[in-house]
Image 1 (spheres, rainbow over the protein chains, first blue to last red):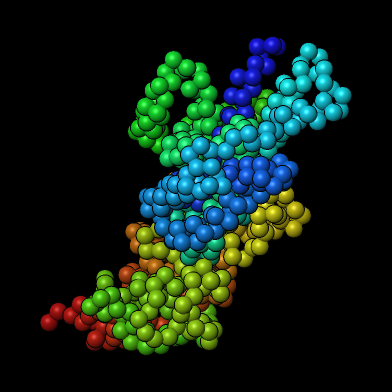
Image 2: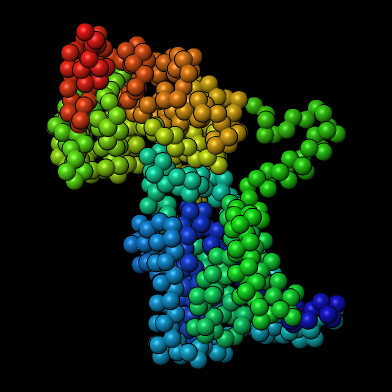
Length: 326
Length: 253
């Protein structure tokens, strides 16, 4: 128990969840086929806005984090309205440039404290621990001390947010909107001719991705106490994209799996931590060559669904499989 | 009338893809657009559907100008089309392709989709039922849950027609629907187009299969080098010397 509640592991779990949220943000933008590298930029906006609001104006955390998401969304409107006209690699380059611009601005503003970054950001776990102490749980419960309780509560909150976002993404993918997204991804021109306002839906997807990335940024800021412009540099943008490249971007489970693997991998391969970026590059090349659709594609899901549902139907011959039922 | 094209001109640099083309489509009519390759037929479709802006001239649909409208708006107004080179959403199922076609006739948005509200569920059910009817109409009910890309060529053509019909068009533009089909498939297609006409939809048909065109069109418009060289009922066109020379070839001495 004591080793399981090691602060190191707890923090790793938090990072995995934050990255999983970022994975969802890239999934949402990629759902319309938009290759955006701007999500690190949106994340930084969310992080800084939320951190500054709590530091300078004393706005409570639960208000500051969503406001960070809203700020990222507003920035997405500024950058998105001209760039959604771009496609493929051109959009990638434009959004990459956007991310760098945001980073350089943050580096040079006084309010963001330049290259030194912001420190002493109110921490979620400390805040919760304090509240728990106030509730008379200073001694902790069942051998778990109040500090750990605070961290565990944060993990539960993060997991709750992640769960909500997964639910959102799953429902979206089977709805009218999700079909429009998929159609745009498959063939934008044919989608437009089929009566879909492609520009509107591409912007919507872009906004949703930015909002979720902003939320992830805000959450990250209140977990790590410190944020600096370096945290949101180019490598971050690529890392987020890698979640989708490794896991696949067809279904929401893809980027989710990608983010879990890529966040825990460096920890598992501690000894190879210096080669982290090299391993990333290697993964990217290998995936492109052997499995460009990512680890989980729709076909993978279909395959497993068939495999898992075939057994119950053979044992109950009276039941007709849902897929073929008319 | 459903559609009126007046003095329609499209210039690509020095090339006159279409020049001063006029014709009208009356409700429920099948109008065939024929002409040699490069005559401007597909450009005509691209102008009507708003994919390309015309250089000059008018396109009136139900007495409303279509110029400057976005393609999805034009589809919403009731003009649907298929493509010469099939453009289906390959990794979506046949049914989903048709459901995408019904997009502009359905309303549920983000909120309804996430929470599966009662109106959303009703709408979804109605739309699915209608989509299945359309798949039955074009004769590919069995393939409902196969991926569009996995369908054989002829069925992909039919699916594309079903997707276009899902937007409930008053005017359907078919760009070489019989291309690459064998004789029996073309016969089936002819029946299908007739059926669609009976449902009250006007059709503009670009086609090289003269048998099909002569059989089902109420009127033909012949283009050559971007100009309309003839217009009239099929029998008349068949005997028009200009058409014979430009398109069907000169009769041997």
